[in-house]
Image 1: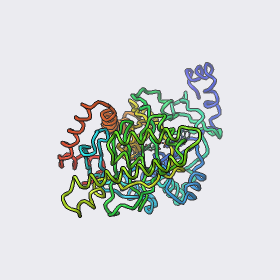
Image 2 (image 1 turned 60 degrees about the vertical axis):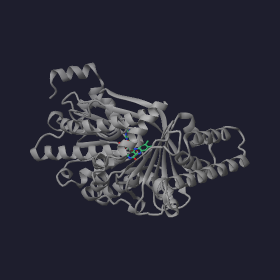
Image 3 (image 1 turned 30 degrees about the vertical axis):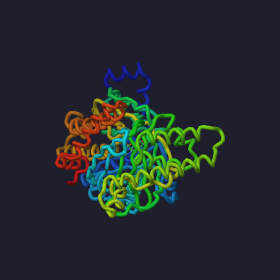
Image 4 (image 1 turned 90 degrees about the horizontal axis):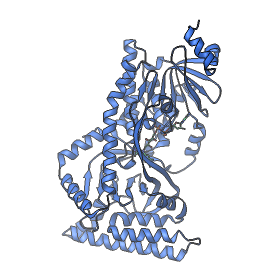
Length: 496
Ligand SMILES: Cc1cc2nc3c(=O)[nH]c(=O)nc-3n(C[C@H](O)[C@H](O)[C@H](O)COP(=O)(O)OP(=O)(O)OC[C@H]3O[C@@H](n4cnc5c(N)ncnc54)[C@H](O)[C@@H]3O)c2cc1C
């Protein structure tokens, strides 16, 4: 029986008529997850793996065709281009708490990262910070596939609905539950709706909260690298990052003579890298120049390369000459740096190996892609019966490699709060008693990460000699603070 106010609302607002009168078209559920990216799928697997929460009824909807996506990934025969770093504590959660069948043949452990101040004018005074933070390079598709396998292996494939989008979300007039109508015509009425649908989240729009954010007016260009030779000690790999005028360039290890890059560039440069440069050796040699040469030398070769590929007809001879010239300059500067910084010939031979990234032979152009970079943080992650995780509520610059790691931390906290509510017999969609606790425990930590990353990006983007000097002094000072570095490494990776 409908109360008077509901009946009046139905008369005034016909969109509620369907939901109130045709109740048989509405499927009730405990949990509906929107978005089957890495965060959404891991959320679903976490529910399935949890002995208490897996008694609930839940479904995940994803607009892409995951079967096709995984088939395409399997047929690649090489690394996919979306490769991210995952912290040891998050990898541990995925493997021991959920038991995901990740393909470890394609996961590369590295033991630390070295950061250079690439804005310095001289190669010899370029400051560096060596952080011993263990991390793991893993393709996003490896994570997606292992979740998919896990869900199917446990006969939970009916909880995964692919190729279907959210058409609308409205509030039920009767009891304020969300009514989620999909592109296949089905409407779900969940006790709890979890939005894992990324930056353009439909759940976020429905929640209608404010947030802070800005675009970096730049793109992250990703691509897989073929090295000239594999690193000399495969059990002690490092990641590398240099802050250039256009943003940071990261060079991260994969198995053997493979590596991957994330190069932050402005729109024009990223378009040239992704669409105009038709020779992978040019890009590879430019990466070597960015790390080994002085800033002015690197910028000279960058300008020259962009000019060569901006003309209608590409001059092949000029390209070969440019690659040779860059390689010779890098070789000369490497010899110079080794001589200056060592006092015997044996150390001299090892110097570049130990202090600089392995030289790149070429970038595999078929793997080059670009992603717009932004910072965004929503003021609240939850409302009654609604909650957000991952990129749906926060986005960050990839320079700290923390985007999905924050999403995985969100999942752990939300699962903890849902489990507590379940134990105490509290409604899992209650904001005050359950969902807000998740938000209150995650928001401060995510804020620190987002603001810290934004600060670093802005600091290194200031192209003023005095600021370069100050950052150099700061980096040298920081590099000598072993205990602070250890604490920071522990905070990020969860490992001493
Ligand atoms: C260049 C670059 C490098 C990065 N490096 C790192 C790194 O080293 N470490 C790290 O931790 N993070 C990194 N990140 C961040 C990381 O990639 C993201 O944080 C992560 O992919 C977000 O996952 P998500 O599942 O929250 O969102 P998404 O990946 O955006 O997934 C959202 C899903 O929802 C689906 N969807 C959207 N709308 C609907 C709808 N209406 N109905 C149904 N489905 C819908 C989409 O199809 C998609 O599958 C990097 C990002 C970039 C751009």
